Length: 255
Length: 133
Image 1 (tube, rainbow over the protein chains, first blue to last red):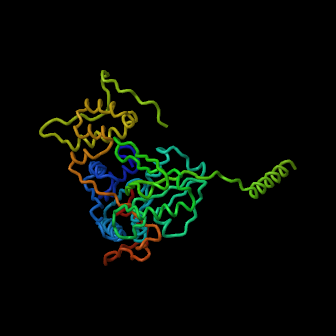
Image 2: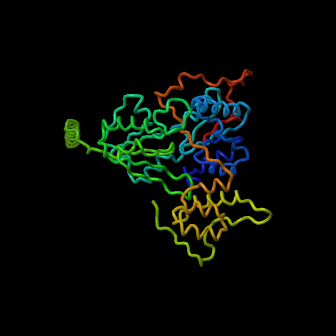
Image 3: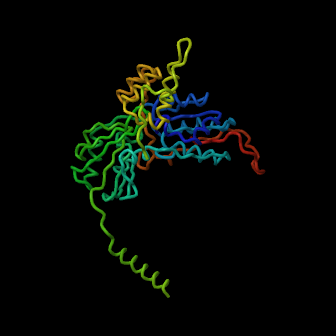
């Protein structure tokens, strides 16, 4: 995620050993850095366009990488954060490459999620943590457990159906707020977070209330976190059954 | 876990591990700034140094005015000016179900029409390997 900090040694080795490198990075400056590691780095960014369907762009990316692969080259795709999270084309190109008999695999990377836990200082294992792409909460019936953390990705483009429009309309976010208010009080804390992509940056952390989220400026790079709103409730039935299992186990040991 | 930051002593010799400005000709500003960024990003004491501490180190490394300003501001805007880079707004890859263009509607990119290699016998590692970074 952060230039100079989060590139794994193995990932760097892949880059250096490749014949051609395709890149979709978090910052244009990071792309300049990448160009110093390899003489043939090709940015995938030019394939984006306002009004152009996203899937068309992603398929073009896959086609570009597959073309080089079929030409006999060792291809490396570099995607910011973890290449397998909120990333269709890396998974797709691996699937297609393998289907055509090529060796292909994915190396995990340090993702925005990893940075989020470190920067916001919470352990997802403590109360549980649900992750959703924000738009999916509007498109589909999803259940939220407000006893755990809720992380919403791509709030800045919520409700942006398909077309490559990069706007951040308050009206769309208002619908999201309405949906969240089914599970959270409107004065519940909401954290808007952006991790550092350059080492001279600090993470950007803003704390507002849920009701303020609709009108708040949320960029495409920012993530929204809702801390737990209710305390965990014990499951008495299961606890009793666990107790019974423990008792049987102890009795078996004693026998 | 983050430990105590190493203090940057202006009088100490050998402070910093930053790459000094390259000599000769018109210099290579772009390289210098990128190298300095990498050095900052990979040095535990520099990565979390205060802006004042970092500016002191950058001064000794003869960093560009833009990089020093970027440190003051805490963002990379001056660097894009220096490097002549236009920041492209990041469009996240959205692929969750429910969007208007689900991947299931799309066909795979077809391979070109050419004879495929005989894969019946175990081949050596195929030259064109797709690797992920």
